[in-house]
Amino acid sequence: MVYIASEVFEALETEIVNILKEKILVKEIGNTDNNKQQTIIDLAEQKNIKPDTFLGKNRRYPAEKNARLLEEYIKDYKVVEIKGGFKNSYLVNSKQYHLYIDDIKVEITTLTDEEIKRYCKNITEDKADYNVTNNIYIPFSVAELNEHIYRTKRKLTITVKYKHMFVSDTIGVGIETKPSSSSLTKHKKHYIQ
Image (cartoon, rainbow, N blue to C red; front, side, top):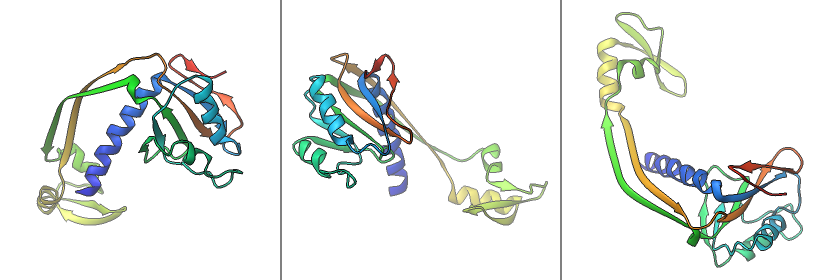
């Protein structure tokens, strides 16, 4: 169950971060740039953001001269660790954004025949090879397969209805690390020059 809970939270987290990025000024920097921490701090100060929240994964940059510069800068901030965004860091003023969750609907259903077929190969009228895990296929009769699927697999659909509101046109700044050298990026009319 922990696996499902973390996946659900990560999906919601990703959606929220994507919405926030509409109002975050983002600068793309090269992977080898050794001033990532100073860059995001300077952006926040130049744009007068007054952040109180850090979104990202890296708070330390061991390859940089002062590896803990950002960690010290954000020591009194709320920290939201983004699971998949280890190369991106954002400083946000949380008072400039409001999220209202209206409804959460959870639905658990059995898989359809088409969904079951996605886990199978060598399908005939009376048997199929079923992917039990990591591309390990085991032959099942159709009756055995249906019973196995019924006992072991369900489809979980979670629908979250929410509203959000921005108080300001710019709620934060961020850096996104890319393999190439420094460049500019644009997120819905917001970019750094």
